[in-house]
Length: 322
Image 1: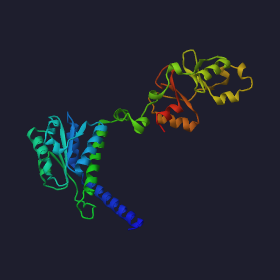
Image 2: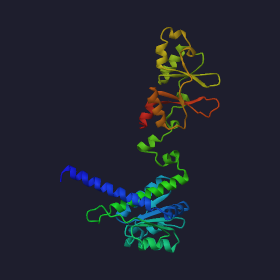
Image 3: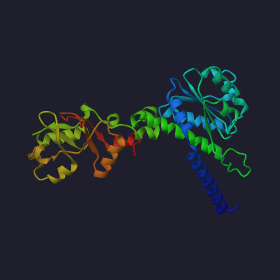
Image 4: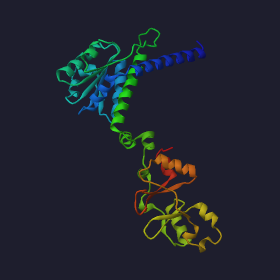
């Protein structure tokens, strides 16, 4: 085979799986809504289970649910038969995946949910299968052929099951109005956590802020700029409100007789600021767009509008916000 053949095969697989997903979307009916409502009503957790390839999909669905506001975990059906059935309890909802609906290893989990009245949502590709007959809510996958040349390896079926899990998770998220703040609580690490960091998480506090009162001679202001190391100094009025900022550009524009001036004569009035609850990613975008290196942090709801901190572009870059 040559490269063009490989590309042709890849496109054929993706096209056919895309068509299967379109069939799945068209097939969704009230049973999908019933499944969402059953999971919303759970006082415990969503227990997701499946064997083989369905088990791999079940693990991913459980992880997606858990990270988006729906407590969930995966239980391996074979391990369930050897003690892990104790992970299921009243108040839980069980989501069981099986393309055939007849996977033998699922028998004990199914029987346990029936014995202890634990709601069961079944996902399978065969109408009338044991799993779907026993389930309180039966989600039937449409009859799309596997893209495997032998029609045997789980391919199209697992793609549809994974997508169905995503659809359930997003429906639950939107019902719960799951926010950026909620998402960050579950994703504090790595690149994603950095992107969801707030300005307040990265800013320097009051002790580090380069501030001088209105009327300060520029000789003193330059000392503050040098000592604090941000390359700027903020100017406050008698009530502590930020009314201006002296930047490197201001210094260059007033070089003639600079030391004979005060900050009011040199500063840029009404400087650009950002709120403490803004995402650090937004702050970085503002600094890049305006070609500046610092932003004073001011609560937009604060009556006095006194600065709470200062954020340097390097703070964002060190935290991985880029």
